[in-house]
Length: 461
Image 1: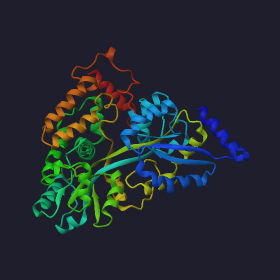
Image 2: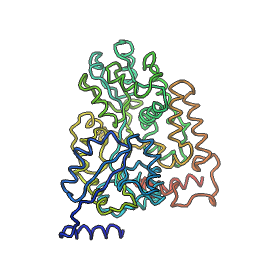
Image 3: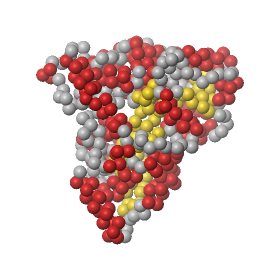
Image 4: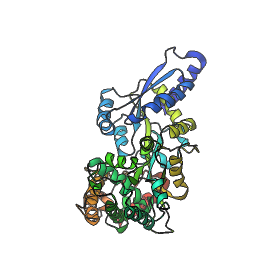
């Protein structure tokens, strides 16, 4: 790409003493205002030590993720956005690229430090163009109070039966509320889906095998393997205490951090807040989502979550590319993982992490197969998105408003109205998408043309 050839020439020129005296100032957009201290005290100083002619400012949206998603497109459109953009996966960022707001970085050599899977979420549907450098994934599972488990001689659960035996033992003893999981508020419903349905679900629909089968139409949300996770969530409600379902997400987290509840469904992004909140008052451990039966292969939700993109209108593209090169380095991966517990590097470097809880969660990758959230790729191209529908369904199921079967049937019915591989009546060949479309040339490149052909075959049945 000509941009990067030109930048390389400028960089060489600067190395020969032709750089301007004044440092170039660039800034980073993000929704992660919680990470300000880490960027200011560790990440940015490490970069600037190697590149003293570039000054970086981390400038997150202080109102959080919802405001970020709302305001960022407006900032990009009116020219007030930063040089670097923290990018969410799949359609949120793809839309910005399609509007010309994000730079094509396909030719950056640093992308060789990432697997095809890691780059999937920031590519065009055909995988031909990459528009961000991957940064981090997040994993979900359970965090528990080790004192509570030790007091009742409870082993960390490996199977679904183990899990309920542990909760039953805690409930019978009565010292601790077995499970901290609130059912009040939209945020609780969203987290209930991400840390409940989407967390344990891969063990039922077999991770990527089931997710890709949903994409090609060979599996439906009403199949047993997709309904079973909702059934498990419904059972969880009886272990949340007398008023558990009336609690918000924040109150459920407080219940665990106070030592009142023994187990909390956790997203790795919450590790820092939990460690700060508990502040050493009791030891904590983590365990992966239990498998349905002994001997089953385990699967984890290891979701590609965050990347760094370049503002296509940045007046400082040379400096921005230098920073992106560093984001793809082993140094950045190591610093980022240790500074921000629970955000796991997507690079292929073997990173050493000091935080034990984080190391334990990373270790799940050794035994379990990883899978991303089931609806983010292609199935959220509808209003409401399938992910948003799962948030609503989660709230309805855990609060007893709808049965798991009813929730699944409603989601499936919506999917059949717009997503062609799931339609009851297959489209005719003349109306089928071309091989370069989202339905055939799937961006999950690790499965290549074999999977694309499988989708095409399903549509032709």
